[in-house]
Image (cartoon, rainbow, N blue to C red):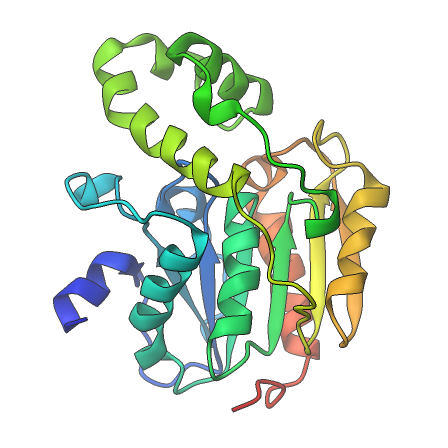
Length: 252
């Protein structure tokens, strides 16, 4: 993968040559780096945000889509590797949490902190058929979860641009199976919205079985897209955890 291809995967709105920590941010199914657009000015200067852009959206609309989560993770790992010269942390929301978990296990240098947001742990993942729904029913599901302006999905041209990536991502995540006996060996923090219709508290607590390191859970007001409604609160929580966590906790 050359430098231009890597830039396609990663957005660096506030590049820093020697940040204390790089924070890799992965969006939800069908999501874009726009989910985190409010974060860069809110993060402390020593934390550099690195926003992941998957194929099939923004300026990557024409690029081939990965066949499954392992293929996606392998390509993303290749793109991220040059930035791991500094301590790094990971924040994944919904599908991005599953991708981030697999990425953390794949990369040679582990993140010093992993934040998994609005995603059930593997033992509660039972697949699904949302990717097989027709356009109207798929749009209804997106509206149920929130995070998508209702008027946006009424325009046929917008549907034609947005839904292929959404449907593809749902297929990836609905057919995904975590690697057997795979556990993270560092600090893992779960974030969730108090009113998330798809993630009960007891299920979210199940993530503690997937790390041998410290585990914590933090609940926020809101639903599945709680982070979109209160970016300053969420970013402050992330910054506080990173400020008080180990700087050298990432393992080569």
